[in-house]
Image (cartoon, rainbow, N blue to C red):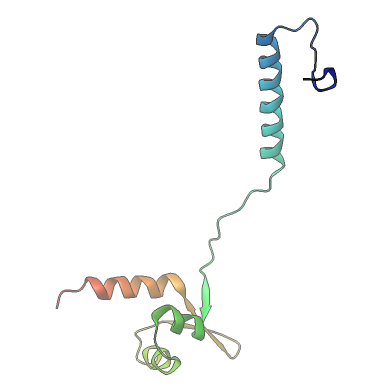
Length: 101
């Protein structure tokens, strides 16, 4: 190795060097964690469109419309658009699969 690629520490034991590096790494990690924005949990339901609901259930838009009209799926109107709560759909599908025939 050439002398240019070597670093000499004078007056520092290997144990002290490890402690110094460890303390510095801990400080950097703490600063990173403190500077990272927190992701807040949403209390709002995830609303999906008719098309997304049809894709999720692997059925046609006509079937989604029929199920909504017959009360099998709860829909929400915002203006002239129709939305569905993703969690409600998944719960209904899960519940319907659990029923004994």
